[in-house]
Length: 279
Image (cartoon, one colour):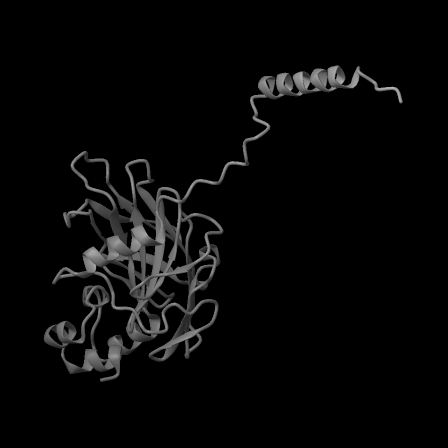
């Protein structure tokens, strides 16, 4: 039997060529594919930030309904329903029994980020430098932004899919959606933003057409991250009931920001509590 002694030399030459090609192309034959980076605004980070604010006596975080982690199906609250999407780009939808329908879509949030449940209710949509959260409460919807670092944007936009004749207007310290007759359809509470130490961060609303933008000025070096900001929206059917008992204008914005029956009872009486909580 004849042994071909040239094969080891051929194999060695091929190996040398492969190694050289690997070095030239900047890749390693043994290196596995790199994993995508973990989003900075994870559900754990958001949970921690929201719990810290919720622990305050004057917490502006809404109390979520037990069903607030339900996705892509209407959740009844009062005389209407709220639908929270599994993909936030599909928007959060208010549907009243009287036919009023408004969709709110955060356009500054990470696209195609899938919802994850939050420990204390509500859902979270993660992102690399900021995340969105949606909490459905007994009176409406809170749409929170958790800003995890200084590189995150300062502007967070929400597109409202308004009906013909409806417009966005400033109302007191908040915002109102008004119809063609000038009647208030939906209210947005005064904007707020708090850093990780519970210190207020400068924030404001801006209106461009049917887009509501919350501007959060987190450029100060003294700010501790994460920063949490919101708008909170009083459902259209709640607004209609309150207007029906004589509550109007900036008081509707104040009620949007008040989360407990006790506070609303003290400020506006039993009729307002009955409108919002059916009590």
